[in-house]
Image 1 (tube, rainbow over the protein chains, first blue to last red):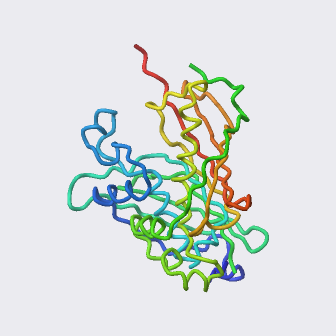
Image 2: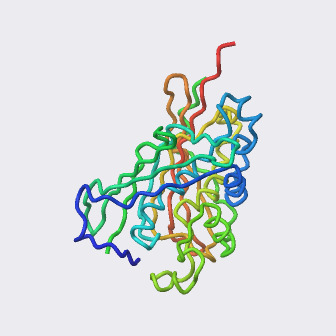
Length: 142
Length: 150
């Protein structure tokens, strides 16, 4: 593992560069194919509404995959992620238009751990609603 | 109806190995729009100390969730899958998944809880490579929403 961020250079509260990720219907179809998750709530509006959702929603695992990019882009080596967990609190609703939805992710160092590791606390929102809870990663720094 | 607590601790047989392909990793990385070269460029991955291209952190979910299907569909457990939503997801990595890995999963029912009429089942998936070395563990919490009153 070759993290480009040094443990000595961070402290509790250090902010990671925030990022925003756009997701539209085409993104969801592509993710369904790549992940093998073909649940129709992620591509079929009629089905989604029938089961009580406002519209098609993004795969929770898609949002989870995007959120950790704030960490992996920061450290450089994705292999530096030792632990990663989230709670799916609210769905990311993806309208059938040319804009889709935007997932905004920020992160900051929440704790300094032993052996050069830190805990990063992530915040993910879409349309002003928090979509992930307890979103945390343990990262091995250099 | 609350699920049977006696299923806690039950493990299911190891899955047939899943072979991690370079192009499957590329396909996944492209689908999440992640251009990190460690996922697609072998030289870049080697420069970081990995023997081959590695997979994004959540890639392994496709493998562990497929394995968890055996638990979800276990008729003896009796989980109503039509009412299930994904509540929590967590991973603990010994090393990143990489191209060429042949990964087998043992699924275990870690906890069963009943919260406000909802059944909450946490399934642990221990992922090992062909040499039997532990690669990653995934915990998937599924919530079966209580059926509406008729």
